[in-house]
Amino acid sequence: MKAEKYRFDGSQPCVLRRLPCDSREDDVEKADILEKTEQNLQRMAELQDAFYADGREGLILVLQALDAAGKDSTVKHVMGGLNPQGVQVTSFKQPNAEELSHDFLWRVNKALPPRGSIAIFNRSYYEDVLVVQVHDLQKGYRMAPRVKEDDPKEFFRKRYRQIRHYEEYLYENSYRVVKIFLHVSKEEQKQRFLERIDKPEKNWKFSDADIKERALFEQYLTTYDEVITATASEHSPWYALPADQKWYTRYLVSEIMVDALEHCTHEYPKLEKESRDRLLECKKALESE
Ligand code: ATP
Ligand code: MG
Image (cartoon, rainbow, N blue to C red; front, side):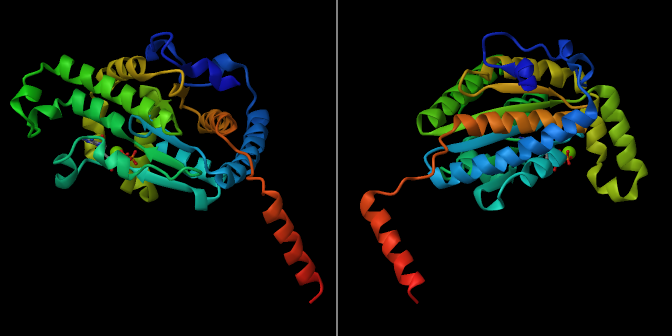
């Protein structure tokens, strides 16, 4: 699996600046990759069908990235290979007042899929250790003095632990969490922003806040390194995927989805003899109409 190279399971630290943002190192041909992506999407659909019928495990795909790295188009593309009946997409925006008056995992719990279904998180609880940390937002939160007296390093160290434990809790409750970081280069982000400004049909995707966040690009990379390193585990791995070429990113994501679904339970339920006999009786009744 090509995506294997980009997988982090906690055994080594993540250093994004040493990882590629495109496919050059991977010795691939676009035409071949496009064909393989189609095959993966078909395989995904087959696996999802059985996974849904099986219904013993739930799958959560977390998508994180800086702006314009391609989260939305990845969601669109992955969804193309799935039956909408068994998938739900949740976009995590800035928390509203009600959400802010709860713990940060409250809104996540509400978005968990039933077993047999897939949840795609477009941004996630990871924002609570990323944007919140980069902008020191926790300083403005209404929380008890014993919580707020921690210095930021300590505050976020605790949150990393809470996230690790939360993902372990999910795993032990028959869920799998797979986390993907779309690693776009600063240059490619600039090109995509320019396109969003130049093309009227893309204007709505751009806001001047994006430029303010871009100024913090390096700080985000450093924070992502820390977050990925602290929260990657064997059961809830991170993948830091090159994101400058959408055709390649989509391929890697499709590989990861196939792999994740293959690891999830996906057996069609087998009928007991009694139920099977009843089915055969129904068949006879239908055929003799
Ligand atoms: P696009 O790439 O299309 O702009 P987006 O995911 O950036 O999509 P927006 O509506 O532009 O969507 O932004 C959502 C914003 O909400 C992001 O800036 C994100 O950092 C912020 N956000 C999400 N979760 C939190 C959180 N827990 N605390 C503070 N901000 C958050
Ligand atoms: Mg945005």
